[in-house]
Image 1 (cartoon, rainbow over the protein chains, first blue to last red):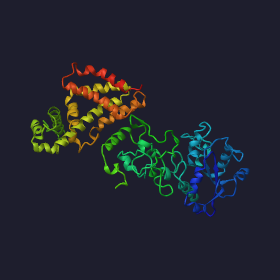
Image 2 (image 1 turned 45 degrees about the vertical axis):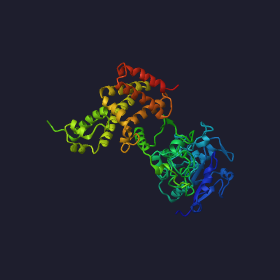
Image 3 (image 1 turned 135 degrees about the vertical axis):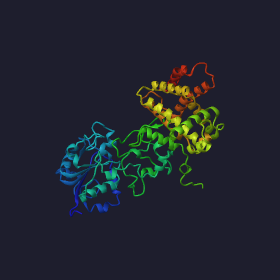
Image 4 (image 1 turned 60 degrees about the horizontal axis):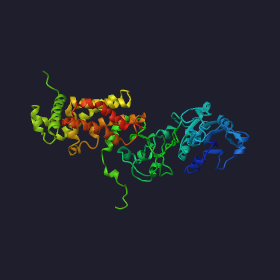
Length: 296
Length: 197
């Protein structure tokens, strides 16, 4: 453990504060705050207010950027193109926190031409921090899981190497699909569908557009509030960690003649259809009934 | 002359069984009849197929693979949807003419004696090679905007029901003209029934 806490600046772009609030739910926050020190944070007690921060933009160890980027968007009277780029050039590590900071997210929908993430604009690596790309770690998600952030902060503080994917997301967190660890996987394999939200039974993919088979994230491995995930609660994954988020018609799967338009990642269409057809041929009573029959 | 291999013997059994099943029906055809027709002892026949049901299952897999490979070649030919429909109709009628026992078996044994296949060919398992290619044909037709999006089985039933029906009445000697003379109008009807409006 380093003797001095790492100096962290948490800067907000165009945001709903979702990641800030998610972070406050991290049970390990207390322990984490022993190894990091916020120079500025929008909510937590810290050394400088935003107005004090912009007077003389300080050096830091880690810059966390939450929210979407727009060059002329101002914080404390300073345009983001100055504020972000200057703070980024004076820090060692940059974290793009949440889908908006990562790829543009929901706010990009309002002004697609002017709003982006800080390194990526959807799939394109054309954000304002291109020259500083090696410092950037992408933590996409709407919001991010608080433990994903504390994990990465801890890795940085410990000086450990973080292996990243093509979007600079840590593979330890995004090497999985949301489908991995989903309790409904057996329903997916045998093509038993759930017909409405909130059930414990059935796959949410066909009728409700679950993006679990396409979405990188460990939501079903590192559980939310340590107990749950969207699919465990009966709500389809909306694919919030991917650059394609938000897509339209979140709760339906696009089909052509009843056949899903997209195959699960890495599965050839012909093989998938043959397997799906075979799986659908079976009627497995155990999977077609309720897990808990209230009338039994 | 070299002795036939086990695989070759198996194919000759299947060829004869296909002929008998499609002509006489599943229940009328017995394992001793099949053995007699190919000059083999009944005991030896069971070395190749453990039951009549298993033989019936292998036959439908064999036919589905033949049709599946034909449709796969059409799917991968790169032509438009209307041309694919023409090609599928042509292929199906050609098989019905050149190897009538295959389509007869499909219609008169597999579809008519579902109870025989219920423990080894649930749902579409044994015809997967064929149905999968039809799925791909329909999916690509809708994806490129030529076919109307609808439930797969509504479209599949229209297409295959039409072809099966024509082959069936052809087999009953009801059609006044040779089957191939109906190909173009049938393909056109299928296309107009399925295309986008």
